[in-house]
Length: 348
Image: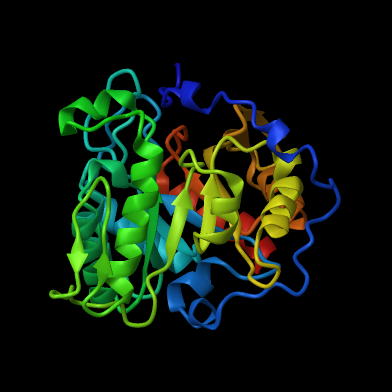
C-alpha cells in the first residue's frame, strides 16, 4: 500500500552552497548563551537546552499514511500521552485549505484555537506553532492571539512563523506570493513591537501604523519566544540574529554542523541561537531496522537505529527535532510508548 505523503517538491532545493565556507568540524558554540529572559522561560528552556537534543511532536501526533485527513477522535488523549512520555513540545501547523496537490491537511483545526485547547488539556509541555504563515494573516491579530495563549497557558507558548510555501493559497487571501519575504519580515517586526512595547509605535509598508495612542493587551508574562520555521526566504544573517531559534526542514544531516557554524559566525558572538529540523518518521516494528532517509526529511527505521541517528545529530549541535508521524501505520499510542522507552531515554 502506497503511503500518502505531502508533496516534497518545495523541499527539493540544493542549499549546500550556502555553507561551503563553513568548517565541517563540530559546531563552535562554546561560550554562547541564551538571553536570560529565554533561559528562564519555561517553554523555551524546556525545548532548547545547550548541549542537548529534545523532541517535539507535530499534530495530530499520529500516523495517517493513507489519507490527507487525520482522524482526530483521540487528539487530546495523544497530546496528554506525549506529555507523559517526556516529549518537549507539541507543534501545530497553519494549513488553512485542503490543497490536493499538497496532500496534507495537518491537524485540520486552526492552530491558535487548537493551541488554546491543548493548553487546557495539558500542564507542562510546550505548545508551539510550526509555523503561522504571517503573510496570510494580519500581524496584530497574530500578536493578540499569541499573547493570549501565552497568558492562558501560563507561559508555555512558542510562536513559530513562516512565509508559506503553497502559492495556491495566496489568491484566496488576495495576497501577493512574490513579496512574501518582505511581508514576513515586516509582520515579524510588528508582532515583536506590539507584544513587547507599551503603547507601541511602528509604521509599515504592507500593514498598518501604530502611533503610540493605543496599547495591545495582554502582554506576555516575560517574553514571547519567536521561532523562524523554514528558511522563510530570509538571508542567513537575518536568521542568525533576529529569531530566538530556527527550525528548518529538508536538511542534509551532514550539513548540520556547517549550518550551526554559519549561524554562529553571522551572529553577535554572544547569543546562542538553537537550530532544529523536522522529520517525517515511519517507525518500523523491528527496533533494529536500519534508518533510511528520503528527501532529507522522511525517515524510516527501528527505534534503536533512529536513536543512534539522532545521537549523531546531537553531536553536530542539533537542538530539537520535530517528529511528524504521518507515514506511520502503527497504532499511535504504541508508537509513542516505543519512542518514549527506546529513543527519549538516550537524550536525557
